[in-house]
Amino acid sequence: MNSAIFQLKNYILQSNKILVVGHENPDGDTIGSVLGLYGLLKKMDKEVYAIFPNDAPEFLKWLPFFNNCLIHTKSSQKVSQLLAETELIIGLDFNELKRIGKISEEIKKLNCTKVIIDHHPYPDPFFDIILSDTEVSSTAELVYRFIDRLEWTHHIDDSIATCIFTGIMTDTLSFNVNAHRPATFETTAKLLKYNIDRNDIHRKVFNSFSEQRMRLLGYALHQKMKVLYEWNTAYIWLNKDELKHFCFQIGDSEGMVNYPLSIKGIKLAALFLEKENHIKISMRSIGNVPVNEIMKNHFSGGGHKNAAGGEEYHLSLEDTLQKFESILPLYQTYLWEK
Ligand code: 5GP
Ligand code: MN
Image (cartoon, rainbow, N blue to C red; front, side, top):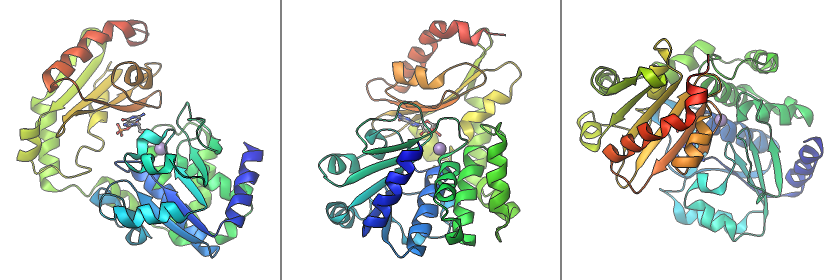
C-alpha cells in the first residue's frame, strides 16, 4: 500500500492532464471522493476533470465543484476527447471496470496510467496501481489518508473538506454502519476543524425528500414489503408502473433497502426495482450474511459483505423474486446463525 501511494504521488506530479472518475449511479462516497480529490488537484494547479458515468441524485448536487464535473450520458464527446488526451485516470469507489458502464469500453483501449482508490473487495488486477483497503469506512476516508500520507493536507480547504466529509457520512449512514474503527472518527474530527456545517450537510443529504419520495417509501413499507420470518429476511419490490406513479427520480430509492433491517430479527434485506430492461437489486445484511457473495453468485453483482448490488437481465420481476426466495436455503447457515 505504501509503495503504491508513493508511486501514485509520482504519477500525479508528472502528469499534466488527470481525470478523476466515479462509478455509475453515483452515491455520496464516489461523488465526495471524486470532487474532494478534484478540488485538491486543482489547488495543486493540475489540469484535472471530474467525470461520472451518469447523473447524480438531487440531494448531492449542492456539493462544491459539482457544477464543474462532466456527466458521460450528457457530454459523451467531450469525455471521449478527454479520455484520449489524458495521462492519468484515477477511479474512485469501484473495483472493476464494469462499474463505470460505457466509459469502460474506451478506458480499456487507452495506454495511460489507470489507478483505483477503493474499499470494495476483489479489486480487478487490470489497474496499474491499486490503493485498496476493505477495512475503511469509505473511499473518502481512504482519499483523506492518501492526502495525509503525502503531506498534502495543507491544500485542503473548506470545500474539499466538505466533499470528503460527505463521502464518509453517506457511506457510514451518519456513522451508524462501517464505523467501528477509531480512525474513521479521527479523520472526521480533523475534517470538522474546517468551516463545514455538519448539521446542514446531514439535512441536505438525508432530509431533503420530495413529497412523492416520502409517499413512495410509505407505500413500499406498507404494501410492498414481504417478511420471511423463517429466513430472517424481508424484501421490497416495485414495478415500473408504481415507480412512474410516484414520479420516481434518481436517488428516490436511496436508503429504502435499509428499512426492513429495522425489524427485530431480520438479517437480510433486499430491494428489487423494475427498470427499463432489467431488475436492479440492492441488498443489505447484518452480521455474517455475505450479500456480496449472494450478488456475485446469482445476480451478476458484488459489493461489500453487508451492502451489495446487482442486476437481473433475463427474468421478469416476479421470476426474480421467486429466484431470490429459492436461493435463500443456500445461505441457511448464515441466516440462522445466532
Ligand atoms: P447499492 O445497493 O447502494 O446500489 O450498492 C451497494 C454496494 O454494492 C455499493 O458498494 C456498490 O458499489 C455495490 N454495487 C451496487 N450495484 C452493483 C453492481 O451492479 N455490481 C457490483 N459489482 N457492485 C454493485
Ligand atoms: Mn463507498
